[in-house]
Length: 339
Ligand SMILES: NC(=O)c1ccc[n+]([C@@H]2O[C@H](COP(=O)([O-])OP(=O)(O)OC[C@H]3O[C@@H](n4cnc5c(N)ncnc54)[C@H](O)[C@@H]3O)[C@@H](O)[C@H]2O)c1
Image 1 (cartoon, helix red, strand yellow):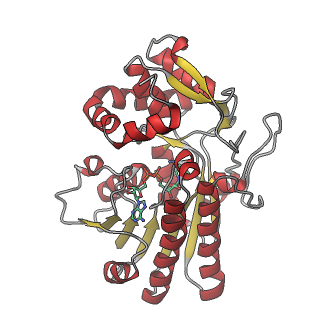
Image 2 (tube, helix red, strand yellow):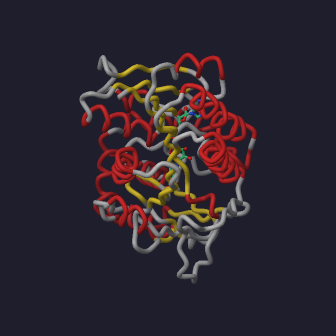
């Protein structure tokens, strides 16, 4: 099978490519990625020399390029997106361009080329925010209510994918997952930011009162869900993928990290809340569990330990990132004082 993976130089896409090539000896993969600040080809070193792997640097919103790249492709697995909420607040335009125009371009060409499956990776953030005290969880029937430029563009892309299924019969599947974490995640996101800052004995910024809850999903569990959906997921269906039975607050997750690293909690620094910050996400993943037999294999503590181990062993990787473009962004977001 020939797969086109978009955004395969990013965090989740690179885990998917490594896993897929290691476990499906008949598959070949084209990785199309325009190498934004969030990309890292270092994550793909193990497949770089494989004759079954090809990297193409390019933008998913370039119709001519996509028409060339999608020739002979059986399955598209679409990860490419601008992904950081804080950056979408600073400047929504790249999110509109990549997440909406880019997804439209891929769909249009996939329709023309008659690909066998188009799997779209999306987020639980499209459903908006839950009350902290509520027992409600997002499920496949929850109405969309995105509240940030990031989630609004992901919602737009989900609607487009469904429109291509209903209108043109494009064989699509969609997965909306909760916040991922794991090795090789760009250190702007909460867990890798907390780990790397703690390792450097620097302050860890937490938005607002830190009580916001997320439903954390270890990246390897996410990959196993995508694999199952590609094998057995029903065309036209959406599957929600989450990691935990109960959400955990941002401040508690940072405290867990500090405890594992044996660092003091006074490294935590509460900063102004993110405008429109979603209070809580919680996922009911019973559909994928009942229909495809998926469940997460890692508990939060074990997955955090594995993640921390990786950051301890790969200091060069994240130090290089933190010295570069990241520094400029971080200063704009949180100020210079604690760097
Ligand atoms: N990380 C999470 O917690 C999370 C949670 C839910 C859903 N998702 C979704 O999963 C997908 C992957 O997320 P991630 O965390 O790996 O993101 P990431 O930011 O680490 O990687 C995104 C990749 O897409 C590439 N890209 C961006 N715009 C592009 C364009 N126009 N053309 C080609 N390539 C482009 C980037 O260069 C980068 O390599 C995204 O669609 C995201 O919305 C992520």
